[in-house]
Length: 429
Figure 1 (cartoon, rainbow, N blue to C red):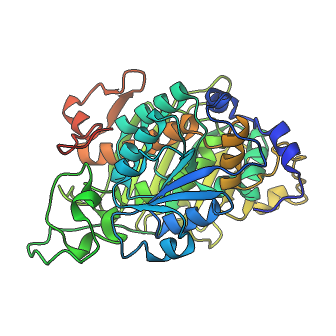
Figure 2: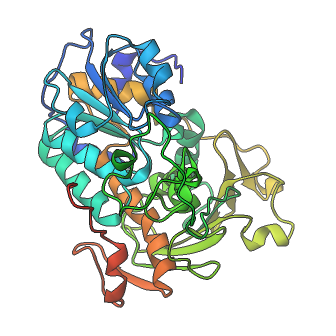
């Protein structure tokens, strides 16, 4: 994340190409501090991704920690003994001296924790996906804009240099107009049938708090610490886990927003758990002079037909832009123009997107100065909505037509139950 650019240079140039509209809503934010003054931060979820995010903000003042599993919080509590510890984030957010909150819980509690923090006027960093449901994503983005809080979603690769160089190459028209994008990921999160046995809840795990707004079910070790991702009540499978990282690149480079239609295929739909493999197809409208785009997501071993035709380098996960003049293949750290012989001697365009000071650092600077971040909830809310609509189409079992303005599926009202889920009694967003 290091950069030769100074923080002053970054802040002067941080309204990045193609993202100005998405970032405009967070220019004036409450509770500003001097750039040299430390923020008081509360962290919800302190193990796994939470531990990485805690490390990312550790140079600030960590004044509160929260985790429903006391056992997994041991290391964080040892590292930050001065921080007050909670098992219920609702109680943590009553702590008056907290300026900003980091949310790294399982997906199903992202929105309740984030929304409560925003309503209290606190800046928020939330792991991807921003929320568990499409409805939550829209409402969280709206609240962030209303409260003028500094926000950032945890798609850390967005801050790396490679994505910026790809965006520049695409936006300079190197491979011409783009009407087709393919994204694939080999990972697979799937649940299965609900367990029938009911083992005892481990000491230190506050199961009812861990469930939060999700429907009640007995504790079982098959759900955690990470395998909750395979269950609809808590996560959304591989699509929810990984698509925000990879779809971010075409979303940014092509200035995509809301899809018009979405359809998906996979194994027979299971009422409890996400599929082992999935293919989701999105159709995006034209954006000014940019043509309509068909974007396809694949996971669990599925890949685009270009691999069968022997036209692709033997890379792992990646993103393929198909343009009129050629193709661009990218992953997190590299890109290549195809066919390579057609681009021999290619000279990249002069960089016009400044290097990042770091994904967490951007958010911290925004909290203190009111400057925009590159993955504010206005941007990442739209990205999350699009990603989650792939699961909605899969569970609906048909191609859905999306009215983004009114948050409605116009051709399948029966599928609206997948757009917004009811919360368990005692929980609210």
